[in-house]
Amino acid sequence: MESMNMEAYYIAQAISGVILTLSPKKVILGGGVMKQAQLFPMIREAVGTNLNGYVSAESIVSDIEHYIVPPGLGNNAGLCGALALGVRALGSQTGE
Image (cartoon, rainbow, N blue to C red; front, side):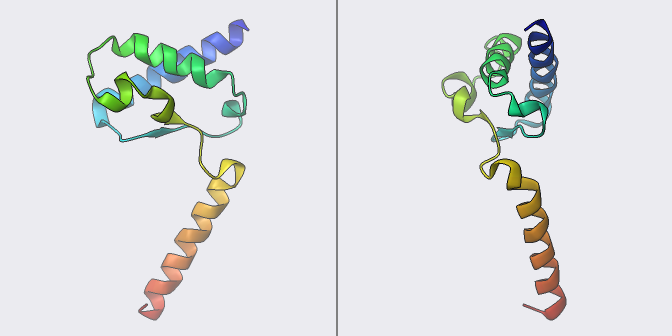
């Protein structure tokens, strides 16, 4: 469990930096490490601790469960995104 705490800590540090730098509307975490569902609550808690009220955006303060989320398409997110980009690129070549 100690390794999970360390992973959550470092991921939360990165997310906190991104929030403070870029103010994203949502943070989507995927990939092999994030298949460990127990990391999400740990990361959300650590981000809240890191920000310590500094950011007052309602989505972060009161609804962090919907702010830091897994990809909506699960393991197919990368494949579907690549397919969508390919379709868009083909459409722009044909003038559609």
